[in-house]
Image 1 (cartoon, rainbow, N blue to C red):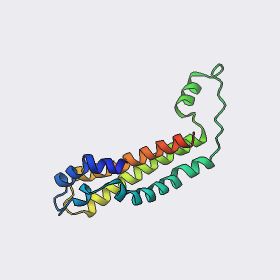
Image 2: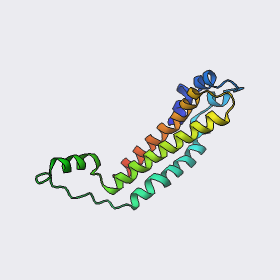
Image 3: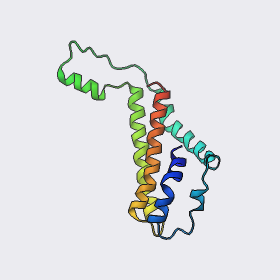
Image 4: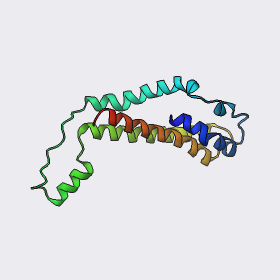
Length: 145
C-alpha cells in the first residue's frame, strides 16, 4: 500500500522534478494494485523472513520488574529498554531494514541514475523507509510482541 500510495500521490511529481533524464513516467502513472502485487508479495515475504521469523523464535518472557523496590535508574531503564526479547528483536530488525533499504536506495538512485538529484533520490528512498517501518510495526503487532 505504501508503494501504491507513493505512486499515486507524489512520486510522479518527484520523478519529473528531480530526475532530468527520465524519458517517460508512464509506469508510475499506470501503477495499480494488480501490477504492484507480485513485487509486493516478494518484498513482503522477505520482510517477514527478516523481521517476523526471528522475533517468534526469540523468548517471549519479559524481564522481571518490581516497581515497589526499583530505584529511579532501574525504573527509567525498564521504561525505555525493558521490552521483551521479541519486541527488542522486532525493533532492532525493523530499524536495520529501514536504515539499509533507505541508504541503499538513495545511493543506488543518486549514483547510478544519470540526472538524479539528491532530493529526488531522497524522496524515492523515503518510500522504502516508510514501507519498511510500516511492515515492521504490522509484523510486531501480528506477533503480539
